[in-house]
Structure formats: C-alpha cells, structure tokens
Image (cartoon, rainbow, N blue to C red; front, side):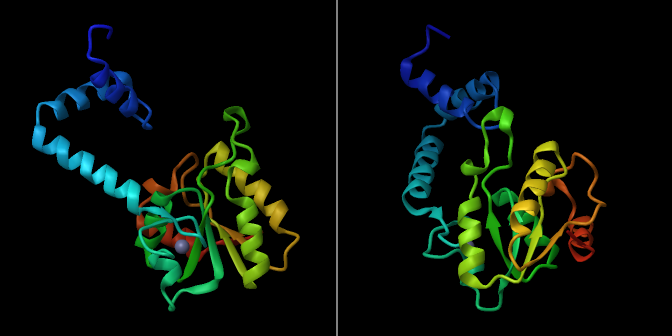
Length: 198
Ligand SMILES: [Zn+2]
C-alpha cells in the first residue's frame, strides 16, 4: 500500500507480525483504531505499561509484574513438582483444571528444526539448572499433541532421564493434533490425573 502514510504502514507492519493476523486483518485493525483517537491513546498506554512492568519470572519464565510470578510466590505450591508447558496460554489452561498443585516451567516454544527452533532456543538449560538446584522430584510434560509437541516430549524425556526424577506425560485423551490451550478443562484435568509414567 504505497500511498499510505509511513506512520500507518509501520503500524500495519507491526500488527502483521502477530500470530494469526495477516496483512488484511492488520490493516483493518489499524484503520479501525485510527478512527478512535481515545482508544488509540489507551491502547498505546496499555502497551507501554506492559512493556515497562511485565517481565519473565526468573524461576519459571511465566510473565509477571512482580519479582517471582504469583504461582512461584505461593507457599502452598509444591516446588518439587514441575509441569513443563510451552506457553503462557498453557499455564492458564492447566490452572483452570484445578488438578495441579506444583509449579510450572515454560519452554517458551516447541522444538521445530524446520523453523530454526532448536533446543538452545528454548528454556531447557534453565530447566536443568532448576532440577539440579531445587531437588525436583517429579516432572510432568504437558505439551501439545502436535509434531512439534511430540518431538519436544521425546527430546526432553531422553534428556531428563539422566536425572533422578519421576517423569510423566499427559495421558492420551487429548485428541491428536490438539493444543493444550484449546482442550477443555475436564479432558485436560483427567489427562493430568491419569498421566503416564515415562
Ligand atoms: Zn514463576
């Protein structure tokens, strides 16, 4: 869209970088926002505030605006039990089941060699440090039943086999190809309860 103001084009390009938003949707969102001056101000403030205040929890890599995230900070949570997930949405999905009293470790992605996502791009070294330093007793792999999720589960089960921890993965029951974040809480809760030892 060559005739557009570079300010508008820049904004469209930024929206276009978000997952699931193509150039058309991104243009639609930007034009819509630009017609509502008040909203664009509060949108920009919200982004700026999130940028200034939100960071990764140094323990689990969840997002937080405090030192540790609310889950790691909660003395009721069992720190010896770690549920490995790929994203923030997955933490929310598992929390909704009310079946998990341990803490999380977010990989912030899944292995995908084709897209250049190799083990060093995920928070795997940090996970190993955590296992060694905190006397972790049990690890549950709660990753998507996608090709990337399976590859990551296989990689981690081999890697973590060297540690003296009880290792399990979610029971089948989550449909093949399904993302954790879109699995309903009853199905996910029962997959968690009936987790399969590796
Ligand atoms: Zn945390």
